[in-house]
Amino acid sequence: MSFRKQKQNENTIYLEDTLEVNNDTSRLSLKDSIQDDFELQEYCELQESKQELARLISEKLSGRERQIIVLRYGLGENEPMTQQQVCEILNISRSYVSRLESKALAVLRREFEK
Image (tube, rainbow, N blue to C red; front, side):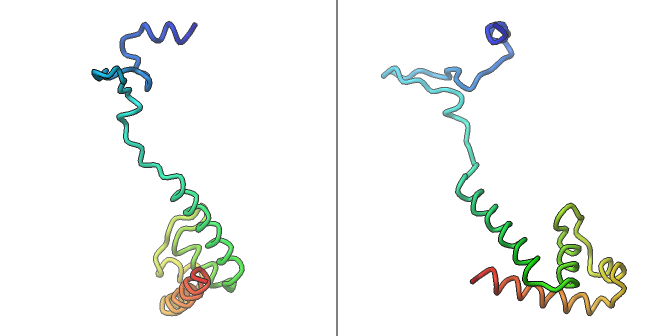
C-alpha cells in the first residue's frame, strides 16, 4: 500500500522506471543507464590483502616496529602521525623511528610478496 502511495508522488523515481522504448519494444530503464564502478573481485582482493597485511604486522614485526607502523600509517582507529609525533610518543629519536620504519616496511614488503 505504501509503495502505491509513493508511486503517485511525482517526485519519486524508481530504478525500474522506463526511460525510453526502442522500436523493437526493448525498454531502457534507469538502472540500465547508471554506471556501477563497484568491482566485486577487486573489493574481495583488497579485503584479503588488508587481512594478510594485518596478520604480517602482528606476526613478523617486533613490538616497537609494530607500534611505529600502526602510529605512522594510522592503522586501526588511529590517525596517521608524522615521524616527529611518533618519536615524541615513544621517546626515541626521529632518525631511529625512520630506521625502524624502513626496516619494518622492508620486512612487510618481502613477506607480502611471498
